[in-house]
Length: 415
Image (cartoon, rainbow, N blue to C red; front, side, top):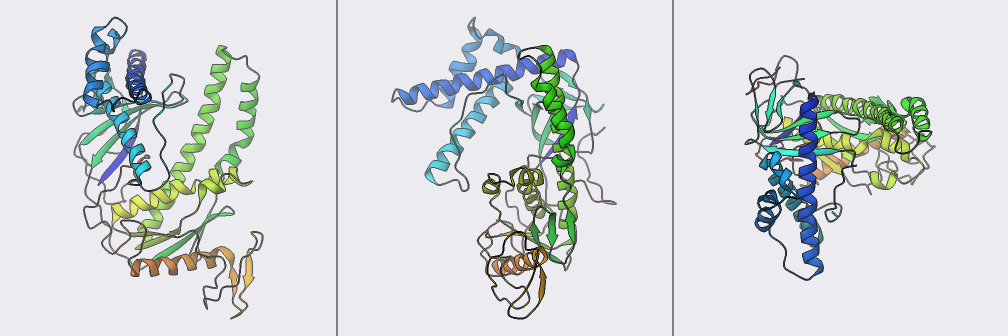
């Protein structure tokens, strides 16, 4: 399976200029190739192949006066930009034909130098890890990296990213074998909410940290200062960086909380079941700020890939399942209830239920039933989860910390 590990990088002034040039060259190749394909489509011409685009927009473009500066960066950066464009087109076509499941994927769009996120992708021909802990990148130099942990295996690709507040990150993709945890008897159903971030079927609750709400006062002040600066001025650019840094801190705290909570749940339970919430729909209601602050989708994604990594069972319960309407003691369906009703009494057996705890228990029962019937929605939701060589995509965030007393063995030098 694939895992992604992120590390903070600290390039010097000359390396920052080289990276900025690489970002720009990759963006130009992307836009030129996308423009050629759009013009060919509008003219009714056949789809322009990648080989032809590589010859026209990379090889021959370097020999022209207008694009001669493309030769100043590694050719791998330019080729990977074209490959990424092919991937976006492939996902778009698969989404149109129904081959790709999930939400519809739109066609590729042009990139701008004003985008808040800039990135380039490299393969093993354009980077290597040195014994002194630095990472050599072709035509950039040796980048200083803060290693929070050692990589479990040699990386197969590297993505260098600059975020909106000017931070640089190195994202390595590694192929590794599942790290199966010892089997336990416990199973858990999880009900996600706003008053409590998560309620487990055993009655335990995880409080909602409300990261945005806690930082709201400072964010308002920084945003107010930004709005008072003249557009295009240097002071406005400085104020924008301050706002971006504060938002980055909030996102980092939320991600750290998600990783710790999801890792603990996966370690303590052999099977985990959650409700498949319509987060995109809830994000358009009056509760939008609280819903986005909770970050349910990112948390569920972490549970899913960590279950596959550690040999646990994971399944989603359909969002139409009436988890808050059914009595978990007798199975009687008591009807829908407004959100302000946090406790209710079953009209059939008289059991007094906490709304969230009852929903978590129902999610557990429904998840068990779906797995037993072989109708679980996730590929790893079975007894063999993590024991097969099923493909699991590399995650966007950094993988969880290794277990205490059993450190991950690195195949390459660390700090």
